Image 1: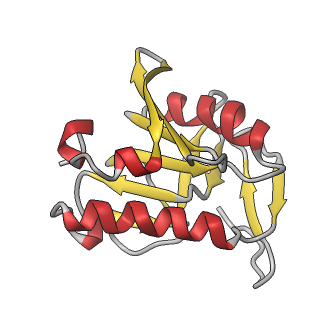
Image 2: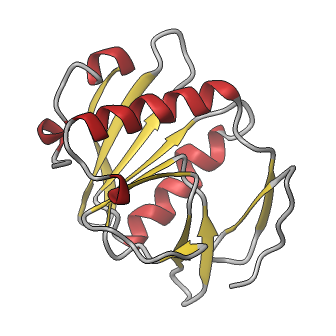
Image 3: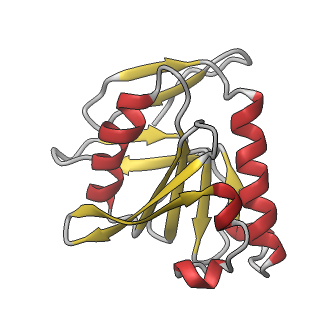
Length: 164
């Protein structure tokens, strides 16, 4: 998969071939992703299992492959270097919902990640408590497992959420 790149935009492509051009994440997105990364690392997950804004090759129902860039990814083991990494060992993807990305994050990506077989999908809202809604894959779709403010989540252990 070959995608355009420049320093001012992020490009994603759905498995159906629809190109999305997005601005880079804002400061609040970056802080939320960093807080989650520090929480995971402090609990003992190695740095080669956690990455922010890395590309994932997302398989489609018709055999096509797209590319998505979640705000945070957790793998079951370290990955080889690459731009579009396979979803084979992905345990969790996190999307931080930004203004303008609500539909893509809450519907489109949710369906694509479920089809790809990613076990957990978390959405973080930019509301007053930065609500984290955790979805777990049951069969071929995500079911809401829990919802809590980010501050509450950060006072739990990742192992409580099957992330050890």
